[in-house]
Image 1 (tube, rainbow, N blue to C red):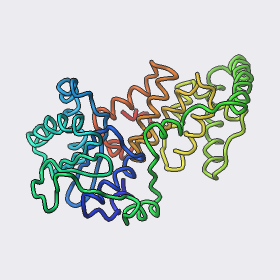
Image 2 (image 1 turned 60 degrees about the vertical axis):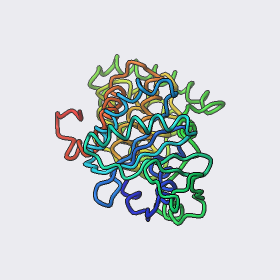
Image 3 (image 1 turned 90 degrees about the vertical axis):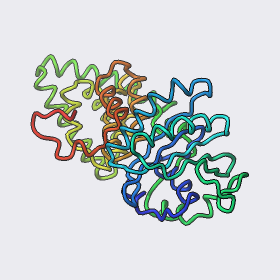
Image 4 (image 1 turned 30 degrees about the vertical axis):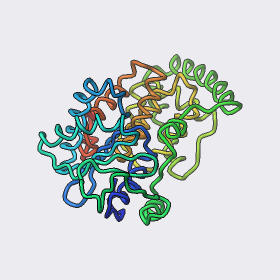
Length: 329
């Protein structure tokens, strides 16, 4: 979010060019809220558009969720954007904007993006908001150049973001699966010889070694990665891995999540979700939670992070954490 705050956004076209970099992917069939405090964008949220017949049921929960998100970020103004045809976007805008206004938020604009043009629901001046929409070309905007220089990314769509943490396949997956069988046997032998305390010590050592490897922009070998993922299935060891969250840990947990034997992906995917959330990447957090719950639908850490997202809690709620013996939530 800090990189996004430095982008030169001075018009609706600039904002629409910047949104994919804020979300991490290019939205389609989406409802997006962009919260503003002063002159700074402080938060953004995205949801799939509902079917027109389901708007009434969808809007109640979505309005509460978005208002919480904006309030937690201290946003006082908001821009709402619907991506899709008018038949899908207009009913949502008609229902959502009055709720935002009633909550004390200043709706700066309500935009629809369809086929490379944007339309304003609030501006009635044809000189700046023609009825047939205003074309914009993100490839010709200075915002795109600034975003790339700032290190922001915009994947083609949410599916591409999901694919970025999907399980590996082919020979790579077979190799880790074989290594996982050996790692499980090693875990059983260690537990029998040294008990749970010995297992925890080995787990902390494995986590520390992994951190050192990825901090130096290297990766774990298959047997090392399998050993780590087997150990992370113990909550005590997993908790030792989430006492700190730095940017470099995002590629680390992405790599471990992708390469892990799929039934063991819940722990590394949850650690990826937690790290991405603390780094301000809500989109990656969401898909990582989904990946964790696909591996284990009852995984408690993934559910806790999911609840934090749904409540609109900002990462700043954990400023000053960790403290010894203090849970993160």
